[in-house]
Image (cartoon, rainbow, N blue to C red; front, side, top):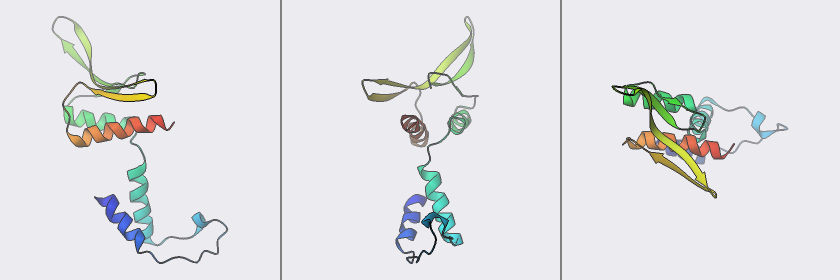
Amino acid sequence: MKELEALEKIKYYEPVVCHYENYKDAPMDDEQKETYELLRKALTPPTKEEVCKALSEYLDREVKINNDKSFYYTEEKQYYGECDEIICGFSWNDDIRTISFEFDLPPNLITLTGKFYEGLNND
């Protein structure tokens, strides 16, 4: 995993004597910037747009998210007209948070969706 490789790189960085008021203002070389951005991206939860795009590409149809934070797509049914098909939804009862999947998805999409919902807990 790229994130683990980035952590291994950080382990070997030479300590910087920092004369800056804030350490975050200290300059980074290109490798440190690349490592920082990789880790920042890996630790940042995906946006709803990123999850919708990934699910849309996998399911080959436009996926949206509703106010209840459920991902869905709209399908034309023969006798019922347009119907929303839920892909997965998020619920919580007494501090227990769960994700219900209505479709079989590959592990990377389950992880992506889970990270999105984890990010909601942090808001």
